[in-house]
Image (cartoon, rainbow, N blue to C red):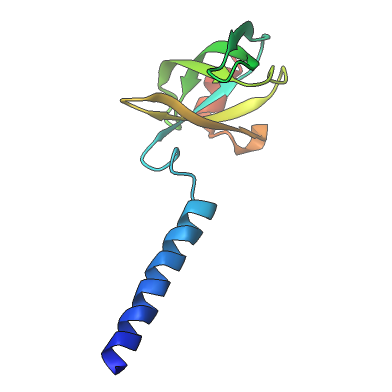
Length: 120
């Protein structure tokens, strides 16, 4: 009986930990390389129709992103909204999937070598 109770507690802890990880961890950023970009133009607007019949609008961007060492890479980003001009983004890139996530950051949070390349 005591072993069964310990096993039950362990299972509950594992399941609870898994649920917490799914809630608070962005798996699209795990193992991804970070690049920094500056939004200077509007995205190319495209529309489509989902399988349920609803329509959607995407905004496509082509950027040159720079990592913390200042090395550049061509990036294609698709956003569900038109991004704010002048915004700095930290873009997460996986080698096999391309851009998996992004977030707006303050200019002061962009590493110096990347910022130098972005502000040329």
